[in-house]
Length: 284
Ligand SMILES: NC(=O)c1ccc[n+]([C@@H]2O[C@H](COP(=O)([O-])OP(=O)(O)OC[C@H]3O[C@@H](n4cnc5c(N)ncnc54)[C@H](OP(=O)(O)O)[C@@H]3O)[C@@H](O)[C@H]2O)c1
Image 1: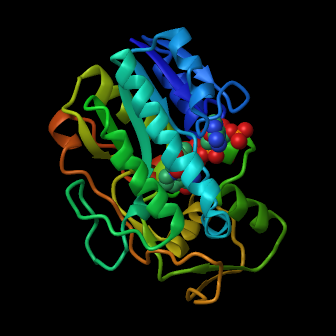
Image 2: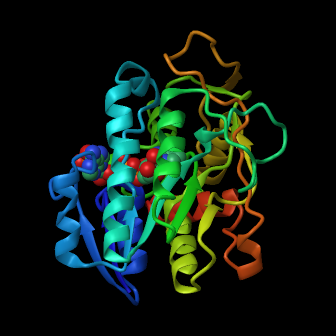
């Protein structure tokens, strides 16, 4: 397949390029190649005539989305709409990368692909609206991930929660992490493999949850990072400060897939994925 990846130097984009390059013709588009919120800029896609367009581009700084809602809707929603329209014209499949933040987090059981979204912040609303726009192209996959870690780091700049924790531990800083927010971590390498499988097996179009298996609180996630790396910082659990940040966050946004196991595509447990990441990143 000829596959275009928008946001190719980002955290997920980097692993998508590596993973899809094995067996496919991959075109990586960076932010300097394409501005998803600008329809005319997106016309660059016509030059490559891809059969699949994967859009990983996003304005995903949750608190900043509250301050800059127009930017959130321009990049996330209009961007998805532009990709949906152009992919439809090309007869290509549109893949939109979405988020656990489309849910309100009031449940105590992981959200499946058929759970009803109800976002509680601007970022989540802009991504849910983007999911709807993506459906303008009947040939679409909406792939939801959450709490991402990958070797490239956010925006390809090396940073993510795991790296922040390790840096703090090595600096002997006391660390407080919330134990009342639950999520399913996602190793970008595993999410990239899931997407590759979805495309190669030509799974039915629709929504897929591609987080690693299981879930944890952010405190448990931090604890596991230190257990695996044998670092021993002063780590303490804390409660969410209701005044922290501008955006409301879903307290329980764990995801699970009821679809992927049928195709042997279910990603491994998050602890195994974390260990693999730490090895790949050279932390052990
Ligand atoms: N990170 C998470 O924890 C998380 C959780 C759930 C879902 N997601 C979703 O997963 C996807 C990938 O996340 P990620 O962590 O890989 O993000 P990332 O590292 O920030 O990568 C996004 C890429 O898109 C590019 N980009 C940003 N705005 C753009 C625009 N307007 N037009 C074209 N390109 C643009 C960025 O380039 P520049 O950096 O040069 O601007 C970057 O290369 C996003 O859709 C996000 O909403 C992420």
